[in-house]
Amino acid sequence: MEQIIRQSLHEASEKLLLFIDNPSNLGDIGRAATVMSDALKKGKKIISCGNGGSLCDATHFAEELTGRYRKNRLPLPAIAINDPAYMTCVGNDFAFDEIFSRYVEGVGQQGDVLLAISTSGNSGNIVKAVEAAQKRGMKTAALTCDTDNLLRKTADVAVCAPASDYSDRVQEIHIKVIHIMIQLIESQLAI
Image (cartoon, helix red, strand yellow):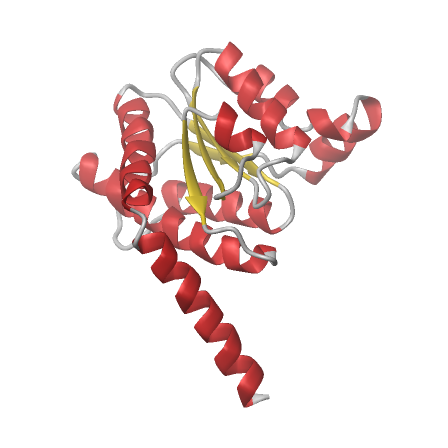
């Protein structure tokens, strides 16, 4: 049991060090946070989406902005697309690939930001959401992995975790990036 624990922690540590050692990652995190901060300064909102564990991360991001992160402050306008009634309705009546894009088309406005999260970067419904956001004049930021994937190519800015055989290693980097982006957003908004 201890061997599994140690091996898992070492693997996570190695991926984090790979991520830190790539200077473009730090710049991409800063660019994504600035895109969001600029939108919030103009009274716009952030919409986030993802599948499975990435949906949980998208929800966590939105709740940290509307709630609190490290200190009390006014809530910031952020929405995670996570309503199961809505998602199953659109999945059933239209297609699973449209569950996020239809929401963006209905709620997203020019100047808003979409945070799209996909560990593979090839989730059709996430890529379609980015395309729908861009058609509405929204900025798009993505959390994905460091492979030649559709989300990375489509989003305005993409933060890419080191590729891994398992999605949990990518998700571990994503949650750290989410926390850093929130910290940067609060700093840039001086709150």
